Amino acid sequence: MDEVLEKVRQQFNYGPYPRHPLEKSPKDDREFLWIHDVTTPYYLRYRQRPPQDLVILDAGCGSGYKALALALANPGAKIVGIDFSPNSVDLATKRFEFHGLSNYEFHVLPIDQVGELGLTFDYINCDEVLYLMPDPVATLATFKQVLKPLGILRVNVHNQYQREMYFKVQEFFGLLGLMQDNPEEFELKTVQEIMGQLNDRCELKRITWSKSYEGELNDQISEFILMNCLLQGDKGFTIPQIFGCLEEAGLEFIEMVAWPKWRIKSLFKDPENLPTVLTLALEEATPMEVLHLVNLLHAGERLLDLWCGHPNAEPTVVSQGQAMVSLHPQLRNETVQQAWQSHLQGGRPLILSDYLKFPVQGALQIEKVEIDAIALGALWPLFEGTQSFESLLQRWLQLYPRDLLTLEPVPVEIARTMLRELLLFLEQSLYVLLTVE
Image 1 (tube, helix red, strand yellow):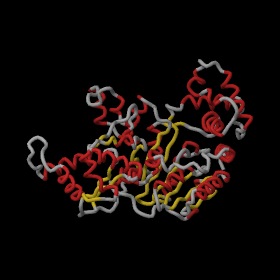
Image 2: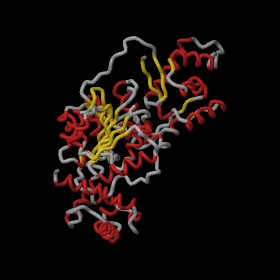
Image 3: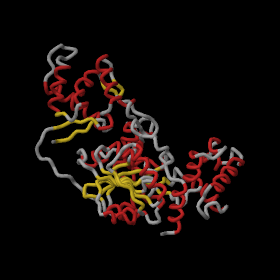
Image 4: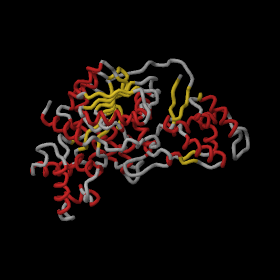
């Protein structure tokens, strides 16, 4: 094993990541589950819902918390976790046992040996791992070999621009010899001592340190120091560099995981009136170039976090069928349903973005998504499951039978247009999914 990678293995074996207690569960964290729900990237890529009986790989599963999120967000999926840290795999197994899950398997296995499992995967989650690998392109190519033809791969790397000061921290402590071997308690306390005694106006301390990291060592403080100040093998990337890695590995970019935060217009005071030079440049820019511009203007994201897959992959085309409408699975839960019902019965509009901010959270602000009582009533059956557009249209006509100005019956085609516009508006944020079945 590569010398640096062996140090990374030792570090994570000493401190499995993330350090969440076994009893903690993301079951009520809709934002977190939204990211880990395969529905989200699959719909973005194919405009279809994902297949049943998913097989999901969590590559570098660590302590198993994100594997747990994958299991909860994708009921019925088989979860396969691999990690080269025995202590991490042991903790991940205990986590799944604690939460009563059964359709899983964890293996102590390096990523480059994943083919030995003899499995192919609908979805691969490689979170907080790729930037530690000696050869990211080779790692991506390994994933491609075990990814099903329509499978989706999530990977991320540290953002060179956003994390620049932490790379300086690591270099500083490396020069002091604190990263020569696997950092443990002595090294952690030494970091605390040095950072605590630095003048508060020192740039490195001001940007990378907080008084909350001082005091007696605990799991939270130890995790922060290990994952930021003393992280072995840490590397930063720019957007062009990560796109270059994808191209070398023969993979195709799908979308950024936090795609609303990468919309360049959201960085300007008047999004609909951008400077002329920028508007002209954007008309000719590739997706990679647009993302690079955003990162140069506002490197707010620690991770360059994206979905990718096989080039030119296309699902089976449904040539005939009717338009069907679904709520995103992470909105079909008791909390949202109760709020929806309460606002519907009270005749009040519902601010849907209060219950799921992630898909409308831009780089600098959160957009408000509000739907009125008539729309709430028309879409209410979506809590029972997928509905045809035509059945929702009939409900719309019953709820909105007359023009509020003329009191004349609303023509069917006008109602159809109104419902279509509503659904397209909600689909922009993937609150609803529009498919042909």
